[in-house]
Image (tube, rainbow, N blue to C red; front, side, top):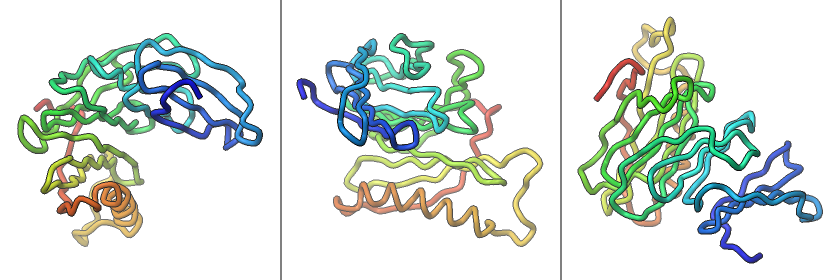
Length: 218
């Protein structure tokens, strides 16, 4: 393969494998069964990281320079761009939120950015985790019947994993004062994935519930 693969994803219920090139910005579709190339396209930029929406309609690409570009998959021209300040040339991760109506991304300065995908390029909230030089390169998200959850991990010697929660309107916490079993299992699953990535460096993992309501600006 003439390019350096940066990300790979299964699509079409496992029938295809999409390969994304690091510096080239190549997006190549191959059949999973035979490895035959179905098509190849060139994105606008190199690829630091990608996030593909669960319905495979939208693709977020870390463009390694100014933030993230949003593509209507599998098109190769961006539908929108989201500027995120960047001091160092490091890859960032993003995750779709709330039925693909928003997304969260990390940064190289201790902040998680939440952008709306309904209102063009609008930054809904900036969450703070760490100092001005804190690298946040691991982000994941999920939703339960009661809340939306974002998990973020720092890349430090004493790294932390934070869980941010936004209660779904009309679904408050149970009067018992604790999470439902389903919510707890989802939280533990997200944290375990992030912890596995960072565990080898002897990190410290901590859970924290902080509402990230979309009408709050920090």
